[in-house]
Length: 137
Image (cartoon, rainbow, N blue to C red):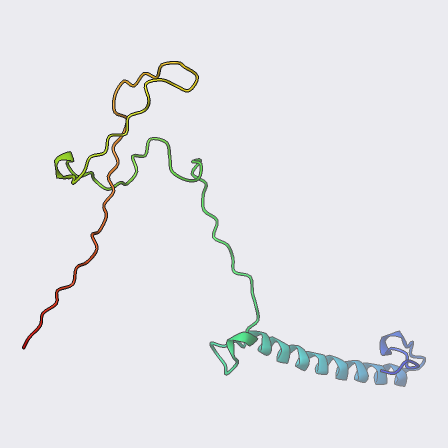
């Protein structure tokens, strides 16, 4: 369409012949647009799974998010959960026992009372591998 051309749908036909010519022009436009719409719909349905298009040319559609029902619990570890820890070896199996006892007095001069041993921690260290040298003569 050029700048000086008026759109077809704004033309008011004066005679019956003008009406029939307008109807035929509008019918042509409708058929062309219908064909174009069907081609565009076919292009929308094409993707890398059902055509030779590469995956980079796929039409990006947002995937529907699956909404889970809220359980009412807070995130993370729950209160009262015992956790998963490695079982401690017996103290007799240890190669070295290091006692970590806090000081009897605080820096301020007050006494520190320790009722019982609060926890045990074991660290396993792998020894340096030794190589065997065999010489055959």
